[in-house]
Amino acid sequence: MLPAVRRNPTGVFMDAARRYGEVVYFRIGPRRGYLVTNPADVRHVLQDNARNYHKSPLYDKLRVLLGNGLLTSEGDFWLRQRRIAQPAFHRQRIAALAGVMADAAREAAARWEALASAGRPVVDVDEEMMRLTRTVVLRTLLGAELGPFAEQVDGAWKILNEHIGESFWSFGLTDWWPSARMRRFKSARAVLRGAVEHVIADRRRHASDSADLLSMLMAARDEETGEGMTDEQLRVEVMTFLLAGQETTSLALTWIWYLLSQNPPAQRRLERELDAVLDGRPPDYADLVNLPYTRMVIDEAMRLYPPAWGFSREALAEDRVSGFRVRRGWLVFVIPYVLHRLPAFWENPDVFDPERFAPERTAARPKFVYLPFGAGPRQCIGNQFALIEAHLILATLAQRYRLHLVPGHRVDAWPLITLRPRFGMPMVVERRQKLQ
Ligand code: HEM
Image (cartoon, rainbow, N blue to C red):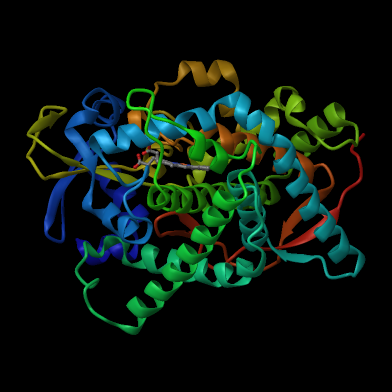
């Protein structure tokens, strides 16, 4: 089973759910467990009985990179970190950062404009979106550009992402080997740590009253104990936010551009909404509530291509799902990629149809079949941040440009830790006219 899962995890899980139903028993390498696709079981594992489930050993890869932080820790330590960070993610706080997000989107538009004027309008959309969301996270989180570190960090990210993605399903079997790959990983991790430490030290020296997330994390005190975070914990959390907050949102946007290019009616409807509501001026936070179709496009794209396509838990004590016995130490897989395509809940599941997310249709659907941000206590802390950011970026760029996939380019979803386009996403930028 392990080689097949490593080769094509989404295919294996999809096939298993189709053939065997709502609870599928698995042996993956040395581990046993279930894939669950029944909403009641998903809710049980992620929410109602969440105390019995820790993140599975597959997250050890992330722990090696990031250290013990919000994404990777458990128990009381996790709860304390979550409590400290939570206020920084309140909707009003994020609304205050929307200007930074919109500015970054306008800078990308200016870059595209320059390319279009020079007659070279092909962009690697995946790289463009990665750069854009990284700029947003850096500016909002650290109140900083990385300056002299930026180039090194760029190179380091690529190595780290691929290393973790490719070794994700190895259950630690090859990590101890001092291979050239491991050496590259360690030196890339050192570059990233160095950059983040530099930023934190700089902020400690020059206290700032800015409203970015780093200031909030530094100022935050645990409500019960009054303690703040040490520099070491800050480094871990800042790296966590950089990793968790950049790539996921960027991939959501990359898949959105791809899906729009393949679905002209949806693209036109989106453009009509942007033209009618914005009438040529750049969007800001207050406009978002008047751009519901733009948001439905985002939701539907994350249904078909959920950036966090699957996650897993380990049972701490014996339990049951749909009557089946889950032994202590067994894994439970919750795979949004599969849940989001179950014919029982989604008509014509492979079709891109943003109308599925019209409020009345969303209300009629069971909870726990749409989980791009997970669910329960470990639900994504950055979910509002990501949605506001994606909404602003899509509105800013789609208002002025239409993207076409480079003819003949092969698009293939590549499930590493996140769901990436295996061969990148080169697209031609077309300046668009206002639709009548
Ligand atoms: C479209 C964008 C995003 C997607 C699809 C996404 C998805 C997810 C998912 C599915 C989880 C839960 C994983 C699990 O239960 O095992 C998660 C957790 C997390 N995400 Fe996101 N995320 C996104 C954006 C962000 C942003 C922008 C940030 C921060 C700025 C962020 C920070 C985190 C953190 C810190 C956690 C761990 C929370 C905890 O365990 O308490 N994410 N994310």
